[in-house]
Image (cartoon, rainbow, N blue to C red; front, side):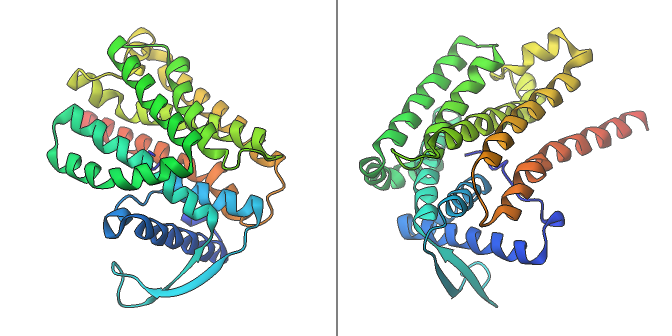
Length: 284
């Protein structure tokens, strides 16, 4: 995943901060359970959001643990463990495996290849347990590679690929009353993630001559580009929020709404801040 689905800690109550941290630590411990210490390196915000969402929707039995963290050894931490977090960790590992191998193909980084190779046995184990989701991820990687080779400039078409794979991932259970809403939520969140990622990387990709579907859009309508991008991302998150609000999520709802309505915009706001600072330096 991309790590864009973050929480806005400044807007969280103290209680909700503690709740979020427990799930975040729980996901970290599930990753360690799958892959040892190297699994913890794969911890990201998007997977934490998925685990918290599914935990809240299904109100799963949870095991709360108090433990010493290797990364923060001075104080004891608290974590929550449940099946939704284990599932989120599994999806995190599969996506990270493909991301590492894709990076190796792009830049020949052998360290990433060795890391990816070390995850392959775990990836095979996860594929046996979740064949539908892993097949969708494999198809997603193929579609993205084809789009890149073809220099596909249709943003809606190429962002659909991330939406489609996120829809499959958000649908945890094969037969469930909430599958349509979960799939719609995952689809629009996936499209948002792809668009925001492309938006953040456009200038860098243009300089490097790398593929990015927003380069052509920027070159053809520079004057309206920023407004268009903001409107596009707002519309996508609006659809994502509608699907969330249709589901009877009471548990963890404060944390989830913080992420959906505020946290996902943290990176966008950071990008705007960097642009303003860059413009000020140009003027001075």
